[in-house]
Image (cartoon, rainbow, N blue to C red; front, side):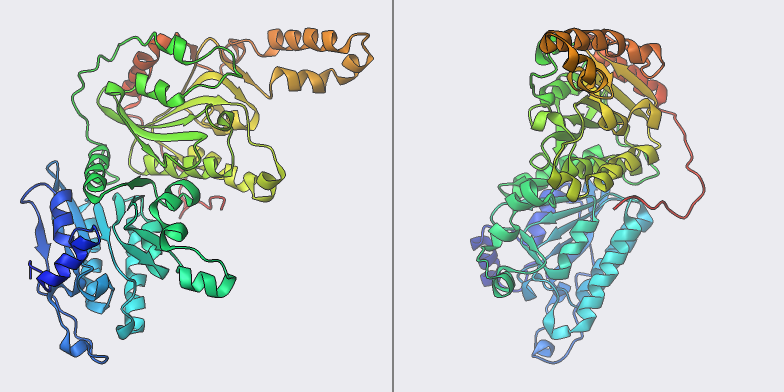
Length: 500
C-alpha cells in the first residue's frame, strides 16, 4: 500500500517535478508523526473496467500527525491512482477525515493533485464533492483550513479550495480553473495555456484566488508549516504565543526617516511594519494581489497579530474594489481565530473612476466596513500621516468600534485634503479674488490651521493619544496586553447578511 501502484507510476510523477502524496505528507508533518486512516480502502464500483482496477487507498491518503507538536489533519490526492480523481470511496475517506478534524478541533490541510470527478462513477462522484463543500462550510471559522494546490484542479473541484481560509500554489505544476483551455477556446475562440488560464502567478497576482505562490513543493510546504505556527488549532483557542527576545520597549527612531512628513511622498509601508514587529518577521497574505493594501500575520512581544496597512507605494495607498475585498476577508479570518488586529492608516480615500463605481465599489467597500464592525477581537488603529473621507471611517476608525486609536504627530484626519476642501468651501471667494492663486493658498493654509492640525481629532476624543513614532512598538504592545482579556458579544442572531 505504501509503495503505491507501481515504480513506473512513481517515476512518472517525479518526472513532472512532483512528489508523491506520501512524500508531501512527510514534508508537511513532523517526522514519524503521521497516522494513516483507511489505507486499505478500495472502491466497489463496476463498469468501464473499474471492477478490474481496485487499488488500495482509492487515490487519496488521509490521516493526522503533528506540526511543531500540534495535531493537524491532512488528506493528499495520489495522482498515480486514477489521476487523483474523486470517486465514492475516495470522497468518503475525505469526508471522514474532515469530520474528525472538526470534532477534534484541529487544522485541516488538503494536498490537492487530482483530475476532478471520476467520470466512470457518474453522479456519485459529484455527490462526493457536495459532501466536501458542505463540510468546508461547516468548518469555516471553526478550524483553520488550508488548501495546497500541487497539481491540476478543474471544474467543481476548485470550489473546495475557494471555501477554505488559505490557498497555496506551486508555479508550473499547479493550475485551477472552472473550465479548461479547450472549453474556453471552443466557446470564446481565445487560445490560452493551462498556466496562462489558471496557473499560480495568475491566481496570486490577477484573480486573488491564491494567497501564496512558490517555486517548488518543498518551499511551499515549509511555508504551510510556518503559517500553521501562527494560527490557533480552533476558534476556541488563542494563537500560540512564543518567547520573544526582541525588547518590548525597543525604540524605533528609524521610523522618522522611513516615513516622509510630506503626505504626497510615497514610502514602503512594509518597512514600517518590519521595524515595529518582533525581529522584523511577518507573513504577508496576498502579497501580489491588491498591492495598495498590506495584510500580514506577525508577532508583537510573542503574540500573533494581524496587520492591515495602506501601502503608499502603490496607487498612493487608496482603497479600491480589490483592496477592500482582500482586507475584509483577512479581518474576518483574524476575528474568527482570535487574532488581534492592528491597522496602520495612510489613506487618501477611495479610488475615483467610472470602472470603480460601475464595478460596485460601494458594496465592495462595505465588505471591509462590515468586517471591521463585526469583529470582536482587540482592535487598535494608528494614523501615520493622512486619513481622509470615507476611507478613514472604513479603516477601523474609533467611530466603528476600534478599541484604541493612536496617531503620529504628522497626522491629518479630515473629510478631504485641504486643497480640495478649500476649493469647495471658498469657491466663490477664490473666483472673485484679484489674485485667485494667492487667495487659494491663503485659504488652504487657514483651513489646515483650523481643521487639519494633528491634534484636532485628539481634542474631540477621536484619537486616544498622539504618540512619538519611535515609541510605536511599545505603545502597541502595552495596548495589546491590556486588551488580551477583552470580551465582546454580538447581538443574538442566526447570522448577519454581509454585503456581496
